[in-house]
Image 1 (cartoon, rainbow, N blue to C red):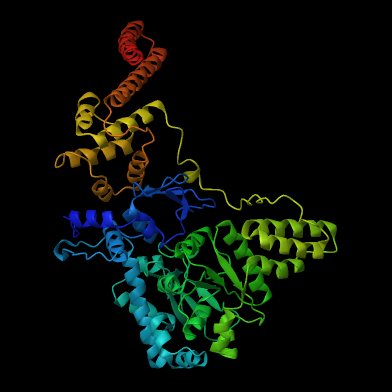
Image 2: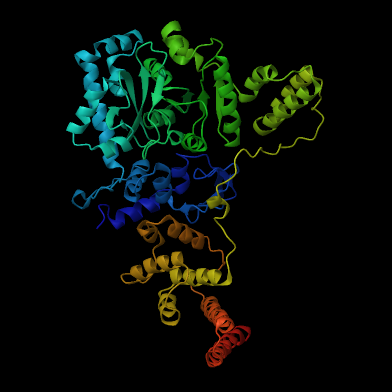
Length: 588
């Protein structure tokens, strides 16, 4: 039994408008009575996500993802279905009554790894407060990091190697799990801790699970890296993580902005200034996966990278990618040459606070940055500069802004773009979609279409379900077959299919996506239609017979015994007669 009643699930689904709920996560654009959006579940540049207000479902026509309000929240939050129901109930202020006796938490296969990391965090914070950590506490005090921030970020100290290894093993973690979490390494039969005599800052995934660390060197030994991060593990994938995302996302929605910085210490600098909506990609080169997480925030970004040459180059790279992903962002005009941590420590809290209000658009940033990357006395460089500027102006600016910017380009290069017909420059394809996305909607063959048609009738009528079972028996397509089993199960207790309840029971995404596709009614057949259903059944029978005929043809071709050939040919002729009877009935 579920710890949320079916009645509650149905009531929440009926009261929750999918447009309102989805608007908490992504930007929707009204198209007629329905809505479109950039799909947050794949590398999408044009609105391919469709939201039906009548049917209260969503469907991406590129990656195939679809569902109702619950499945959208489940997927975008990466939580269980029942957790998604609770989340939607909270959003619409529905008084949900939980049966705690029926509650069974979702089993997470990564929990042992999270537990191991969390146990190590407790050890590190203990070490920081011990005599071993006194010098580290002084260092933190010099960096103006107070006790509140130390506790909030669970900052700790990794002592010499043997103490860490001894503690972790005493807590019952074996060498395999310690190795798989990236906490220890083995060399020449010796086991040692990866992090030693370093300031430790835990890194969490978007749901707040601890997955690794960024660790700062405390001595002046130039032979070792100033910062090291956890290496790639089963739970730590650097390209999928954004530091402080799990803490900052609610503040970002509340304050309607999110500040993107380079590193963990920059995030902490903003925390020291009582600004809680800052995050870091832990490296200046953002990945596609991180871009998807940034899109999910559904708030404007303020990019506050370092003010030095490397920081500006990183801002340029980020901006190009962000435009491709349709992110709304501005750029802090950092003329100090310092990073946020240095601004706070050297210039003060007020200066850091004011810095994020001194922003420019990406195009304005380019007018300052790109002239230093091209030789504008060289004709070919002027053409490249003009082409790049025009691309971003056309894609991000209003007509009024375009006129001003093209005037500035003319002053810089002598090229006059003001009289050309406005057009949207073609987007630079920086990335190709994964093969799984490219091939998500293969051309359907006759049998697949017929099975979809029959399944649509089963969803609309118990009569159709019974007739299909008697005449055909099962679906050849495994996804159709699985969805039909859900239908038969529901018909045991009901005389109709409740699509909301059915959606809530389906666990596999591909089965749920098929249901959404059928709910879009591609056949334009409403309710149970006997003629349409019979046509679908005949097509399935025809395809079955044709497959059997083709199989016999192959056998006849390969067999040597003449008597067996005659027997196979006779069976083939019987099947041809049956197939032709079906074809005649269809024509009649």
